[in-house]
Structure formats: C-alpha cells, structure tokens
Image (cartoon, rainbow, N blue to C red; front, side):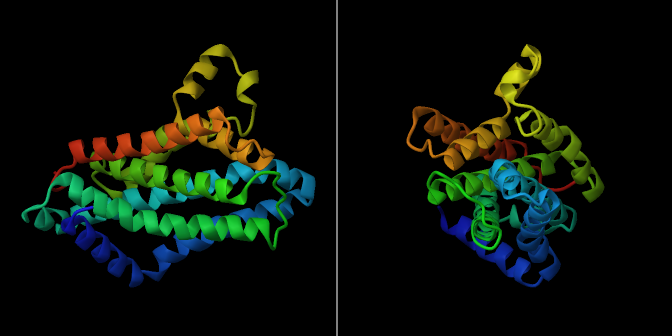
Length: 243
C-alpha cells in the first residue's frame, strides 16, 4: 500500500467521522435486520438455518450501496478531479477508498456476527472465525463492486438503480431462496458465475463445520478474486468527473 493510498484512506475515514448518518447505515442497519430476522422467524432452528447466509448478504448489499453513492458524490463535487491532478495512480486512489471502506466492513461484519452469535443465540457447528472471515470478504466484495459501478452513474439516483442489475440477480440465484442444485440448468450456470453464490456456499459450509475442505478454499478464493477483479475494473474505468 502506497503513501498516496494511505492518505486517501485517512481522508475518507475523517469524512465518514463527520457523517454519522452514513456510519449508522453501515454499522446499525445490518444488525437491526438480523435482529428483525430472528424475531420474524421466532424459531431458533429456522434462524440457525437462514442466518449464516444472511451474515454475508446484508453487509454485501449495504457496502455496495454506500460505496457507490459516496464515490459518485466525490466525483460530482469535484473532489475526485482535484485528487487526480496530484501524482497518484487510479489504482492508488481506489485502493485508498477500498481500504477505508474495508475497515468499516470489518467492523460491520464483527458487529453483525457478534450480535447473531451472542444475544440472538445463533448456533454454528464450525469455526466462528471462518464465519467472520467469509462475512468480511462479502462486505469487501460489495465495496469493490460499488466502486466499479459508480464509474457508470451520473447521479446518486442512477447509482442506486444499479442495485437491481448487479445485486438482485445474485440475491435470487445464490441459493438463499431455492437450493442451487434444484434450479433449472440455465439458472444453475448463471449462478455458477456469480460470486455471491460462492459466498452463500462458504457461509453454509462454515456454519456446518466443514472448514478446511477444498470446496471452502475454492469459495473463499472466488470471493477474494472477484473483489480484486472488480477493483481492477474500477481503476480501468475511473473517470475524473461525471460528464
């Protein structure tokens, strides 16, 4: 990580410190959704079955939304244009953004997983450390995709509109509502190329105690690789300002 990336990370964190509404959205909303889910089912067994997958999905969606809107706001306000007049590369700049939001993603994943395991009584057979690792990777994936799609939006409203195109198909095909093995073959093929499918599989494996298997390692590799690919694409498509 370069000094330019570290400077960008510190600047974003200082800005977020003065924006309590965004911090509340990042840290409290996923926790409140998990609490709502627990009392919606009113059954510990049902919560144990559904919650592990949602530990990755909620941070993924929230980080995607906040990152895409915040980055676009930087561009439309002219901040991004001023930064790019300085001697730093696009990748340095986006790495700084990714690290700042990545730190928040770690805190967010810790909060959601901690509340689920303790006050809400989520029972997992596997390692909670693996469960937390997958949740953090999912949040980082949402951050990287949010940085990527922000390059194609001109307004904050357009950035939000990318959710149905980028997030919803992954949500429907990840195996949360219908097991992937029970889907029609074309849907299964589509599911196989979407990173959130591997995130849900990894969370289910972690909750079931199948840590250390080749499948779990493959899932984690796909999630991390997808996040890095999205970050590289974001650097390649980054524009100085919205036309």
